[in-house]
Length: 120
View 1 (tube, rainbow, N blue to C red):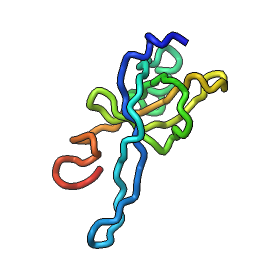
View 2: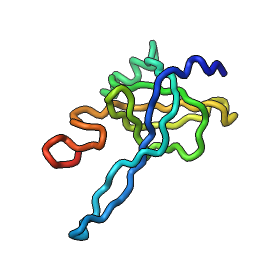
View 3: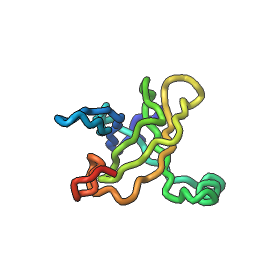
């Protein structure tokens, strides 16, 4: 493992149910950790496979293994939001993991609000 390749900062987030003053339960995103990662564009066959199912904005993030990362989470990178679609433990050695992610379009801010008071 070459630690120098992890040169981008990403923030992992998980959903959390919150009850407001009126008793209405909403889902908010809570920061779990900010870690170093590598951003790897899809190439060749992977790119065309993603494009075939209209997921052209699929990005692969490589990071050190971290217990508890799941496909229910999302990540923030470069003021963009990505849903985690798949988590892969590289060679099942608990050293590195790949996060196959799809960019979420139309979000106005990092907290998931659209800027008009509603939540996406």
